[in-house]
Amino acid sequence: MMSPAHADIFKWEHLPFPTSLPQFQKLFPDSERCARYLEGAKWPKGFECPHCFEKGEPFRFEARPGVLRCRHCRRDISLTAGTVMERTHSALTTWFWAAYLVSSFTPGMSAVQFQRQLGLSRYETAFQILHKLRAGMVRPDRDRIGGNLARGDHVVSGHG
Image 1 (cartoon, rainbow, N blue to C red):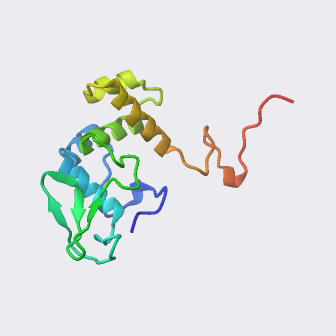
Image 2 (cartoon, rainbow, N blue to C red):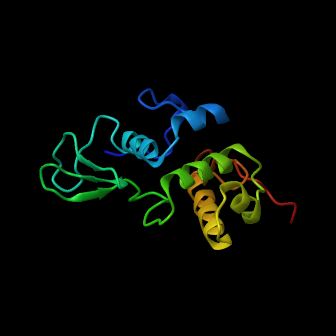
């Protein structure tokens, strides 16, 4: 079971949320720890296979931290499926660092700055990750400058 859409992660009791760079570095030192965090976000009450619905501890792969295997039906489950990271070739640590940068720093960060900060060799990779994270941060019930569309908060243009 996935966590509710747009859940307030600061209120998740089962997952710590870093509020500073040192906390972030301590929580997410490697891809395995990032994978465990994703797993906790997807299945707050413990792993449940999306194929056979069996609950329990999945098989884990040291070389593939983003993949779990159901012990019952033996099917592989990607932790990034259904996220902005789906089908990525970049490491989970890169994505976590990228998400931290996007959510912690100036919204106007360029892809070149982003590329430098993450130590990525390809501009295209930086641009793609940045674009996906920005798109994933948009809340459908809000307009681009923060009004709540469900409440009827609209910015009226000066035309007319």
